[in-house]
Image (cartoon, rainbow, N blue to C red; front, top):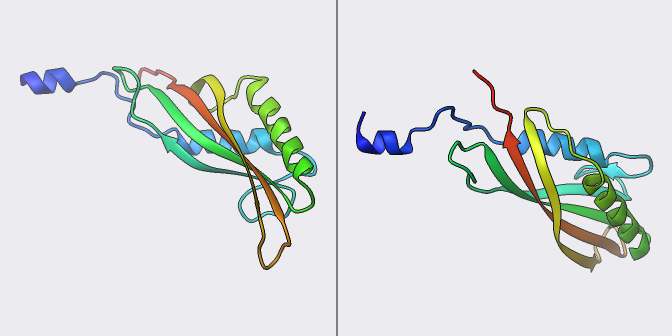
Length: 143
């Protein structure tokens, strides 16, 4: 084995993305009575988007930092979008997030933005965009 092979060799390897498992856990956690979750749902609505999985944070490649945005949308009033965002914050940070195959080490809200827009189908759409960072560690197995 060459020097470079030994230097960059890792055992065990965790070359899988956390994207699918994280998205599924977030959608499940944010689903609740009276709020639609998803990109084509009616209003009031919560969308999960802009998921960015960063480089591996540890030698084994098991620790990940992932950024994502949760957008709360209302077509009636800004206060409704703000309340949905507050509920989202509580749902995501109050209890540990259970993600199959991963340990959630923490979810941190990092940036909040409000945005109002007009479109052809809705006079005014109120949006609150909350960005989060989450730290996940791949469950280690003997596979």
